[in-house]
Length: 155
Length: 251
Length: 57
Image 1 (cartoon, rainbow over the protein chains, first blue to last red):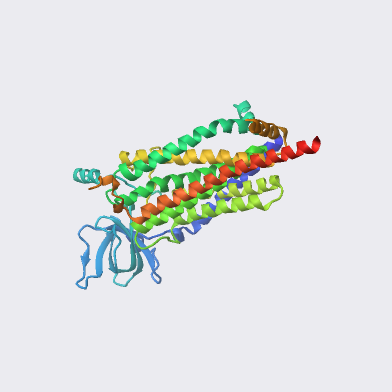
Image 2: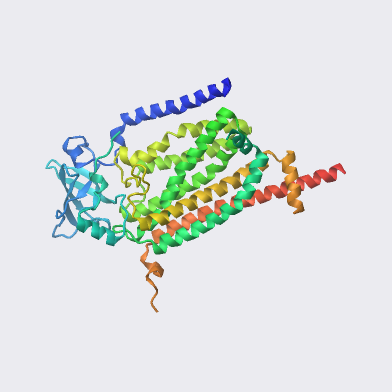
């Protein structure tokens, strides 16, 4: 490789590395703003905004879903297996909504710690399998955990 | 290796090689698309939670995956253009961009429809990191193509576009790791270390692999076709093109 | 007559169909564009060459 090409190679590497470092720093500075949702633990630790609405997400706790007598208001508990939060919602739930399923709710948290949701979205996980396989895995207790409660390698 | 590399960089050789490869690629694309689609739509089992909607995976996942791989091809070819000034590398990059943009578009549309069915009442979430980084990839492709078209001088266009492609490379790890670094509405990646698609049950994984092959073959085929067009345009006054056209005419 | 289960298209949401239709339309159109472009270019170059021949003779 001659000198001109070596210099160009260095310039190209410098460009890619420079942009990479700059963007990494910027992303780390704005990390909180890039979070699509806050976990119940985040809310508990006071990381979530208290004055404006935000999203929270977790698994719907087994046996926690209750429907009020009016038929449209539901309350359920979401959990990230460390902290829990009660969510209150009036409206139609997504088809995928069920106990044990990951959900994301948009709304704000009241002084009593209850989260009032304006809308609720279901979050499916990365495991794909036929129903029979899921049933037998559940029976044997080998069902993989939903990704929302798995430990993630954070930036 | 270097001899082969230099030979590949020569336009007449590339043209002849692609003439031999193209019919095979066309057949491979057609077979894998037809078999993969029928397998994915009719024979693969439905998912335990998403039911039949998981069949969108067979196009969404390959399209999204190759939207990133093709960008890496463009960036690598851009680096070769900038450092070694090999003209063919620039043409391969320029030929790949519209295909990559189409794959990105398909990934965005199918993702939006899939999300609408599974997540609930939304087609698009402006604040989701995975969705936004893939949209940025789409704009990078558009910007790359616009920059290529903006210069009269092909060599200046090539250099400007290559710089843009290399700057945009930073977006690729962001797309891939967005679901791990931040919280996202999008599900996690199906890769576990070296085990690709490990979280997908085998009877659903095999048609997915086949569809990935189909998207790869389709890309290779159109990349060769587009590069040949660009070669013919830029070398139309060279003797090898004229000779080839004569043979073409006589045949 | 009852159809076999795998032919029961009605069980799928229109969204699944739309995904496949959009993908087919996009891929087939860019494919046709590339193939037609090369065909046109080769024809143009051949015509140009014939003109040059006539001019020379």
